[in-house]
Amino acid sequence: MIILELEHVSKSYNTKKIIDNISFSVDQGEIFGLLGPNGAGKTTTLRMMLDIIKPESGNIKVFGKDLDPNSKDRIGYLPEERGLYKKSKVIELLVYLAQLKGMTKTRAMENTVNLLQSVEMLEHKDKKIEELSKGMQQKIQFIATIIHGPDLIVVDEPFSGLDPVNTQIIKNILLEQKKGGKTIILSTHMMEQAEAMCDRILMINNGMVVLNGKVGDIKNEHRNNSIFLEFEGNLSSLEGLDQIEKIIRHGTYIEIFIKEGHDVQSLIEDIVTRVRILRLEQSTPSLNEIFIKIVKGVSS
Image (cartoon, rainbow, N blue to C red):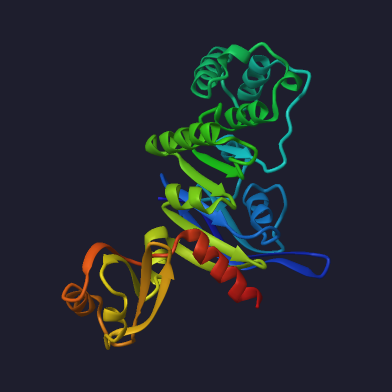
């Protein structure tokens, strides 16, 4: 089931095109990564999805229709710009926000206590927001995003300002939400988190789609025609092999680039007759490496 669909969506500010004819969809129960460098148009895209700003052209459907008040109550949104009522007590604020989304006070209180416990903040429930550290406030804002049990969770840079321990806590909660059938749109510049969590990603640069698909498929598509090799023996015994285009040293191992028209299997068969293999694996770039390559390629 498609939860969100954008068709040929564009947005300009003055004469500058911020989003240029973007189309994509998000399926129920997946974590969908919206990636791109600063200024690429990620936040503008999120705001159009949530009807905070209007596109100048194109169509956006959420839960199969135009966004209406009832549909908005089924969405939780964590904006990049954080903002909480500083003078309010933590537990009172969260219960109040849940009630705004249609929850009873009893259910809101129950959810608040459970979520505060899950992010290790229950002992701070009676403190005012202004008495909390920046990282603690971030966790409270995250709870406010999911307090009402939304079907669609949209988080913009959810790990910003968090230490590794709290990053893992938020990550685990998002993965639990996915297991419960929730749909998550994750906008982040932290490629290692996107790679670990997302089923599919969409990368935009200068307002245009430059990558769209499953993480594994994208990594395979951008894989170098090379292998990593750690071995015992003389490097010179490998340099004359016909299948090898070039060899690059990486500390304790080498990367062997294979000539066009040659396959990995035949190369390995020749290597084992010349050196003792300690470790061998096919080179697959990280999402971060692909991100840098795409952005540099598009902007050059």
